[in-house]
Image: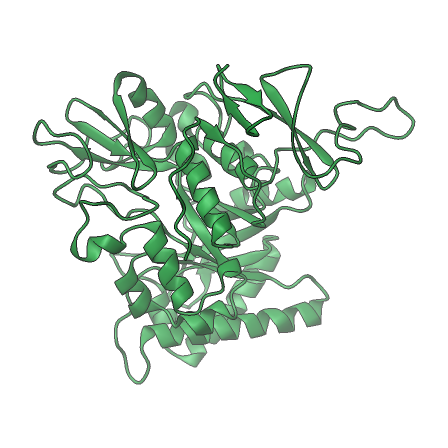
Length: 453
């Protein structure tokens, strides 16, 4: 594993990576948030992510995929119609979750017959609703069974799904359905729940949940998604970080190009209990629930934007992540600088890309953070070498647009826009993408970054 040096001391570092996937989750319960926080597939930019995963469907007592919300089928259609705007976009349906703390997969993987029923249901359901693939939300420690453990049964499910997807593609002459999984980031859970070598060979990509490493259930403050361990970590907590988690997956045989780094668009909160307010400060329970997410223990990024202007913002240099505190409230979260560090780490370790939890907790409408829509994910996309929606290419019978033509014949990379120093061009595979720096910053070609004037 490669451990990078601390990020450069600029507010925004731009780095072109070779990672090919930016997979973004959306949740079907975000539609119930109030006001500008309400989120439906209509809020998705079809050019923002390479893949969108719709969370969440479940499995009924007949081992068949079943919607959860009253309007899931309608929302499936609204999501998949986005592929008319961007035919390259891939959509997957995530299946799993828990009911009373129990995964529906436990019963489904138990016998060859139950697995076969699920697989038949999955293919029919995905084809009917025009999804491109299935995402398995298998996230819990497996228990021992007889004669096989659950993790061995999960391996069988993965192999049987892939075989069925191959046969379906041959029979229907359609593109083969994709298969991915959301998997744990904690080392003991990884060891208990997955035969890493076996499933890695079959899955198209693996979404490692490198977040929720710390939270209000602990007695001292810790960051939700740190890049490295900190000096206050001890015992098993020395592995509660991205570097250890992804490193363990790779050490067990997962190919780096199959692994996607998990990026949260939310932060974990604490209630401080003393005058100390840094990393490892005494705490008990969560800060107040956010006004929109309305769940104690975490705030969406758009809620954090309302907290930080009056808060004291700090940087945990050894973990390359920020935190903020005001009064007794403490939150560890991700910002543009920490995402740049994570992309650099991801690139150095040759990962296949990143997955985001979730679209609906970024400032998707640009209503809260004064930084445009999807400020975190847009920055992540740009840092990974992608761009937003390309400028429209004019037809040959019209006068050519000089902006759209800027990258014609130029190598991939970042270029200054002489007409506006607050913007810059990204050239990628002959396409031109126009980016705007954060308010108050200008583009410096010398560092390929946005910085203070």
